Length: 161
Image (cartoon, rainbow, N blue to C red; front, side, top):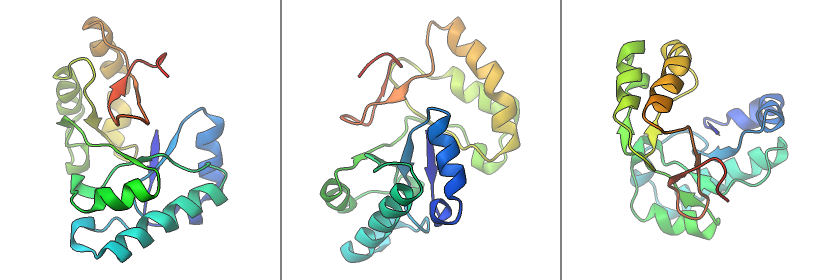
């Protein structure tokens, strides 16, 4: 799943379409990536609704998953619910956003247990390089990359509804 922020869905509709064509979900991560807990409910609503509209206009459908920037949440949950969004938080932070090495990213993934969610991003080169080793590590533990349940916000088997 790819989460768009900073108005990227509005500025790059072809990339949203490419993600959908590749079979990925597109979720909401806010419009400008602010510290949502420092915003008023109205500002929170604007961040979420602008992103919902931009993703839908770009062909990504209407997201039902929201990952709050920085994992910060509070009264934000009421705004998410008003938009029919399920909040996603993570159990393990890969630290890829903070220049983690390939080995560190692979090791963070190795700590995962069944049903856990890891925070990773698609822009750090080390993350992309780590993907084959992550897949091997998960397979050796009898785990597989999953998907996020829109009902619970938790990781489930790719075959689950």
